[in-house]
Length: 261
Image 1 (cartoon, rainbow, N blue to C red):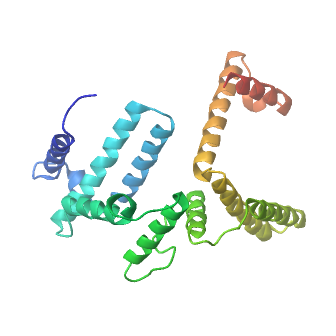
Image 2: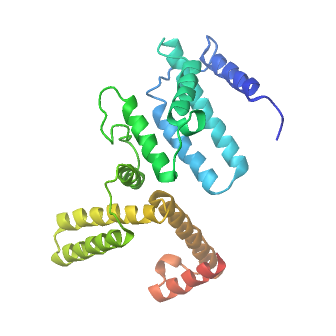
Image 3: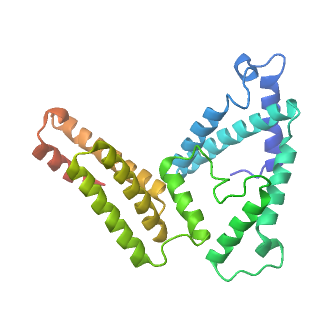
């Protein structure tokens, strides 16, 4: 780590961006708009999250820089279009955080985390001039599991959820039974609907246990991929064609991979 002032580093990055967008700059960069940068922001954000979850500090620093560059890119283009400046965006964020944390910056007292979150939602809804519905601020483009978690979280803050964990578990069991009935019926549309309902309810069950479905599934994906790579390595070392092996042989390799991970 170096002791460089973040403001100085930001100014340096702004200088790089200004050069890229200048008369002698890069044709690709000069052709970009805030809209064309959206997909890159999403992609780089996923790469950042992957590094954070992998506890890869150097990778996290690099990807954080990439995301920061793209955000600065959007702010610079927006300022040139006379829409807003980076300073205005940062000032708005600071004011919003102060407004939404009256228990830190004001005199409000909250009894527990749940009351804190309910107050957060109340303040957010009061900020909206047009649509003040509970889900007005829910981004449409969220990944489905993350969206389901956010939906349940907001519903719980408004008091619209199962009153007890036992009632929640009973509902989950009922959704599972309905999914099994749909499978037994062979009705593809019913299976899809009931599977969605089951996943949606399972997401809430996990939330109540302090588990985030999106993060848990990501960890499960990573675990499977890691073990499968071990299977492939073991097969290569033994001169085996993994794809051609029967399930008994594949399961044996899988158990070895599990023991090694």
